[in-house]
Image (tube, rainbow, N blue to C red; front, side):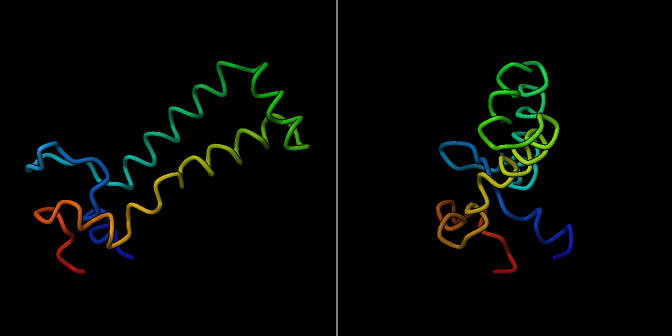
Length: 92
């Protein structure tokens, strides 16, 4: 999938729907970046999560940030994209 194609999928849109929107790919990266910062500034919590995952803190942080980046993968679906017809990706 080319960058131009996946950036046509909206993740956050103005309510009521308008022209203002944020690509779902960027939204997922934004959330992952915030999660990474939160895990880094809370080492005690990260160690606890690592213990629960049976791994080291760095591995747990890496895994969790990647998992969190996928939290809204369903927003690429036709069902979600059709919620704002004016923003429906042109290629679908």
